[in-house]
Length: 451
Ligand SMILES: Cc1cc2nc3c(=O)[nH]c(=O)nc-3n(C[C@H](O)[C@H](O)[C@H](O)COP(=O)(O)OP(=O)(O)OC[C@H]3O[C@@H](n4cnc5c(N)ncnc54)[C@H](O)[C@@H]3O)c2cc1C
Image (cartoon, rainbow, N blue to C red):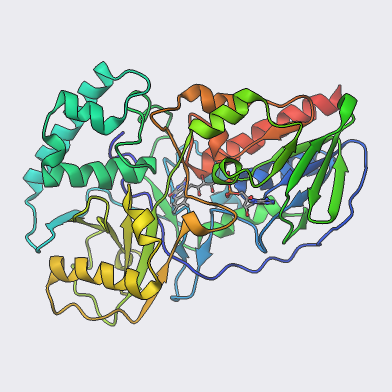
């Protein structure tokens, strides 16, 4: 599992894809109707399934576009992913059906095409990288054997392998593989649960034309009210349905599906009346919302080996621009995508674009030499500051357990359903987890409405 999603990534972006919705403002009443909050892949999937079954459904979306944490930026002349970048394990993955449906082409990324450098530019021999990976895997196996619920991964690693995390290459791997994959820092990850979950088979792929294209079939025919940030959900007494408010506008329906990200729920951005049950509230409080920061840099000419898929740089502090994806492997553009993980996104995302660029350039010049020129163009992501995301994806926090994800997947009364990646324990933090959660909730609602 440690290297399962080590290439998890995408790119930086600043521009939002402008949405074009119907802008419904008063879809009131309507028996058998459903409100879906959020036009990410979970919300679109649920809404599309309901719509296709003849259910009157409206989607309320806070931003001006669909996709949520799927966002493709084209300002550098090629599709670059600000959010989800990979289809993890395409075999049997529901995203692969969307690839087919949209006639998209994919590119298989090669996790083994990796060059690791020290911060001062020495190339770490491949055998040393492999030996360290084996050592990390042994440590993870030892952690799995002893970890109790409630323990943090870094603490348990310290117990089973004292001093291991002081070794720069091993600590780098903890960031580049584990923190990147999981979305949270080692000291906060649950030692007992962090690597639990399910995967599909097959080497990870990226979508040549852009991940956002995969959403086209899902949005077809949907009534989406953009720029509609929901602030209250009220369950009407006696099972009479729900009332959803966004500013001074109100919608009523029999059922509501709320797919806003965990970060939004944690911040209490939506008021629930009556309040969410204790079990849901404590699960939301315990679960981790992680972050990953990207900055894409376009250069006039490559100063790196153009055939190598990934570069790892053993930076300090851990997680600081520790992973670079080389866009020359799938395009003709001289673009490197720098990624920071673990505790570093909190530092990186407080920086201005200029500061972030200078920070990455310091790392690149250390690793590739002082002659590395300034980039021509950059794009930076700051998911923790995106008002409708507040983070990248959920992670198994040391205070949480899989029961928390399962709890969020349970309906609240007969009318309120949560969906989204944070309700899928087996596939948390992924697009397919989000899609499957939307499908699951739509099926449940269809069953209920059929009764
Ligand atoms: C940097 C990054 C890299 C990633 N890499 C990968 C990857 O390579 N592969 C992979 O499978 N997954 C990846 N993921 C995870 C994946 O993107 C998410 O798991 C998935 O897109 C979540 O979908 P969702 O529908 O649950 O939530 P979202 O996509 O977040 O959709 C929720 C929607 O709700 C809207 N909303 C929020 N608040 C309100 C409100 N009050 N009222 C109305 N609407 C509201 C939001 O605007 C958003 O459109 C990555 C994510 C990030 C951020």
